Length: 454
Image (cartoon, rainbow, N blue to C red):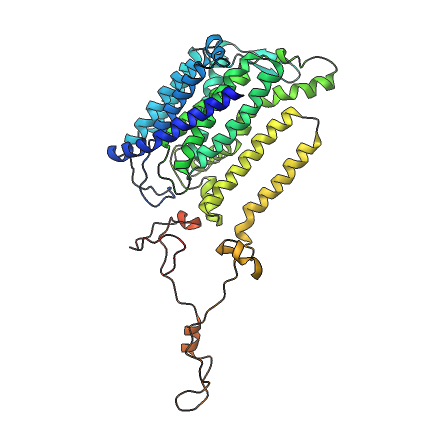
């Protein structure tokens, strides 16, 4: 575990330190595209953050190769080299897309080629466990097609969810943490060396995301772009392929004892058949909904729009940061819930806990619909949106109840009613905070920060 933590820290440090110079390089080379209709940021922001993440990946693999406990991964398996080859290819395609906006079909072809490169070097699915049947060996073509499909789905799922500051990096980091716990348990508890590459890949992936997140949290100073989103998607898919298709279920001795005992023991293997998809269930759901929505509307599945899940959270009324945190919450609930259930499948407490947390998540989703108001004594400890706003009518001085002629002042006139209404504020530029980010950009010259008063 100590070597994994060292690899993670080195990867995070290299990614973090290189992101600043990469940002300056992106600005100098003009990798700052115009704001599109589906974007939620208000200022042109440099991309190419994937450059720093790729060099963080290289640093992590280099450090792990020189550590005594992790060096065996490189000696006994060719998977790290296969990952580096596929990552380099997908990274180059992403950099070109961030700079020149290449066609979507070309990117799809590049993703398939990168997956094929990994398959040629041994990173492929060899067998799958089937409930009631046991381990089923796959032919070369079957393993290749299944591997390419998993890589392409994972890459595009991560790419589709990359729409808010810090969203993709945080969700993939959560998925990598859950996957690391599962792979490390398979390796450490059962002594299966074939799970060691997946543990290494997920540790490096966590370092890449953690090193980039400080620069990418709202308001983001740099975006990872397709060079980063496709890269981390490929690394996550490589870890899933390694632990799911390379570890022989028979080595876990799960098909022993009674039928019921074998069924409960087999869950840690049967569940990982869907573990890669459950860990990125939110991005995959967004991907499927986007394809169905665009096809239904007669558009290309690759046509960009503003109907993603994070856009809908903003439309409901969530702020930018709260929308990201809600997506984090659901990703962590699904990922760690599946991993926990695979470890203790006979415990109902895990199911009850997941159900309870799901109810909490639903309440968080509906918060903008029912905005609570804090009591007077607690207003100093809550954000301004939860405070009671006292109406301050702009009336004439009330020093006398009579007018200049000595007659009682007439109430209810149009002048007094108009004066009683609060003065209209100067609109804040769109895209600064919360649901305003989904609307059209303001043409006003006012560049004040959100929450400032005129």
